[in-house]
Amino acid sequence: MAEEDTNQTGEQEVRQAKRILVVDDDREIVESMRLALEALGYQILVARDGNQGLAMAEREDPDLVILDMMMPKRSGFLVLERLRRTRRIPTRVIMITANEGSRHKAYAEMLGVDDYIRKPFAMDRLIDSVSRLLA
Image 1 (cartoon, rainbow, N blue to C red):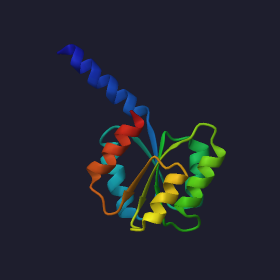
Image 2: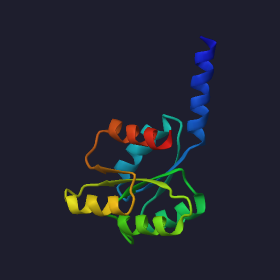
Image 3: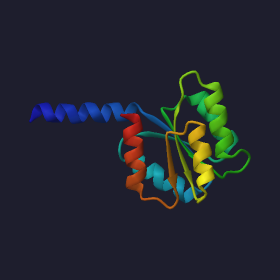
């Protein structure tokens, strides 16, 4: 039993070291994601627009970026393009969007997005993706 406890504690410590940058201009969605992911031990950084998100990604070097497609100042696509061009080791990226078009999903996949989630989404769907990408 003590061995199982040690393993769970070790897993929790690993999660605490993982930093996630959430780039989205919708305060309610950001807060929901922050609460759900912090409850699992992740450290959450928040940017409210594409330019701020790009600057934070470069400065903070997060383990994962959760990126909204439609944002002020710079779209999620432009942020993703820049991250893919400038990072020696690609940052894991989950793109979230309310857009229904399959063309957008295809473009995001061409740019190398790790997951693409349509809004509205169940928080479990996001958590599963985060856990898988940061495992």
